[in-house]
Length: 92
Image (cartoon, rainbow, N blue to C red; front, side):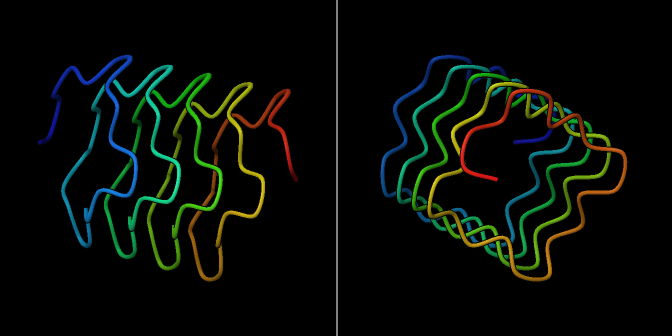
């Protein structure tokens, strides 16, 4: 799914364990409760996405755009957020 355009997609509870979402457009997508454990989200656009209750443990979000993303109750244990834009993110 690298570089895929999933903007505004509804992926509630999706199982995306270790998925390759590098440079994907997930802006304003609903990923609440999704399992993204170990997923590669480097440079992905997650601006305005709903990641509430999502499992992002061990995910790489290097230089990902998480502006105004909803991260309430998200599991970010071991996630790589180096260089990620978290301006206005909710739940941090």
